[in-house]
Length: 544
Picture 1 (tube, rainbow, N blue to C red):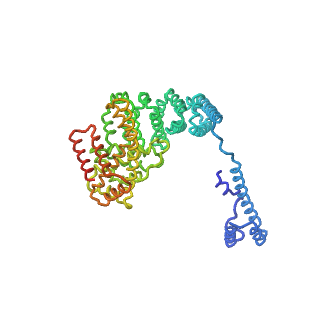
Picture 2: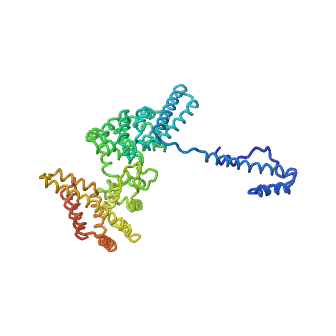
Picture 3: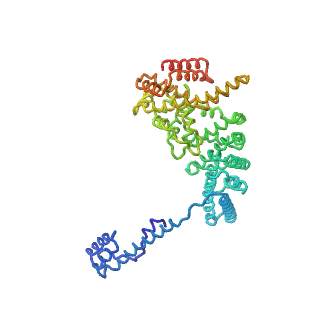
């Protein structure tokens, strides 16, 4: 029984007297009303009522008193239990060893009972619940990555990997959840030594192959199993980010085929399909051998077309993922996919679709306030702001007529608060880039003093450092500034220049940034397109 059931419990008093029997109907009604009046009485009031009611009602009164007394006793006992509950045990080497030992014992016991009673679940079900409980308890180890070596030394990693093929998918999913938390990228970076040991052991145990085998048997129509696939992809992403070199090995262990099959499956476009696309992109980015392997597979042209251009019918799912609270990774993936699918003239249809399905109301809250660095994502503040600004810049470039007017009206809302935010980001990234430029100029000066030659490769390295400092985000922000200033809405132009002047900004600096941006665009495009786009951007900058 839970607390509510305990408090509402009443002893069996036998058969009640039928209404109207012996004392008649009037007496029954009177008793009923009297019973209702007893509720809430104190002990003193109950005693006074008993004296008035006489012997006939005495029995019922005593029962009522006893019931109230029983409830008080139950509450007191529950409160005493809460007060006596010991403090949570500290996580240290000794407690982790004890936990791992318990896990190994329960795992062995469950396996033994399943072998002994394969056709009698009642015999092994309790051991399975115990096993699941200890797996849940082991999540606490993720708070102590410097103790990860114990998981390897005590053979727990090997046992966990073995459970990925457990007959009960609930147990396998519990292991996936644990591995996802253990490999959280933030946690891995807290202890490089512990992380290296864990990742080595996982890869040595063919973790990717086992994860793929487990995903193949899961049914995504079941929410828990669909979540299990999502968390499996998160494990792979965490490992790939920590050790990019594992991508080729992962592709060769069946992951590539599974991703292709899942992406091409005739299923609704959901968070898992979106995540599969992102994982495939990670594999392709991190290794040339993976791209060669991909090129040998059937139907790849169709898939690459899907990945390189987000189809309009997939936009609604990506937009809904932006406001997702339960799966923050989904929001990050959605931003990346939307950003990629809306860039350039090829993204024009996507931009219009985005506005038509009310995407503006989801993207601008993310623009106005950057979420704190989300655990389990490893996404930096700069990366988030880059994707959001890139999406807005793409819409300013591609939208026409009514949709463009709706976008521009967003910047006028609430006394131009979005322009204020835009200018805040401008000065934030301008300062970061200027500091990087200052350091680079110092290094160049020192190299010249030593007689070293600044060749193209060195200049490329310096440029990459400027990008890492936030140059590309700054260029996107300046592009948005010049676009809205040339929109024909005086209110926007005035606000941009007002804040620029108040904070000591410079129109010349903005134009210089735009000129540099114009020179860097157009990779993979025709010469005619590059020239036309550069002229368009410089015209915007000159009229700024």
